[in-house]
Image 1: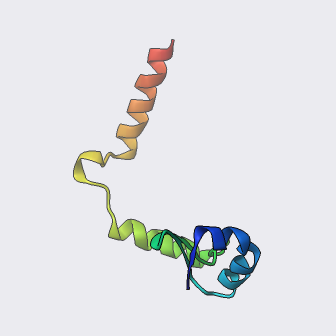
Image 2 (image 1 turned 180 degrees about the vertical axis):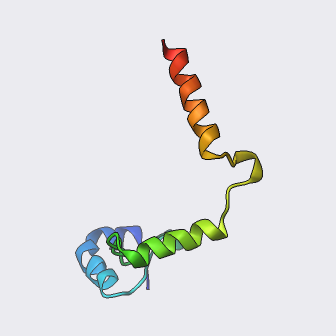
Length: 86
């Protein structure tokens, strides 16, 4: 469904209810789509499924080689930075 900005302003409550029901609402300015009102996704609770999803994403998007460091290298960089504070 597409509505113009003025219509969206005047019928926002009804449009939000329709979006909650799963409908995508396109808001247009002079007939040109500029925004979309869609149902908000619930943020999953921290559980095994979301942890598995995060681990899967991390596996699919590894750090580039130049950004990889060992735990020892990270600890050394932290110690060096702390020494600079003294």
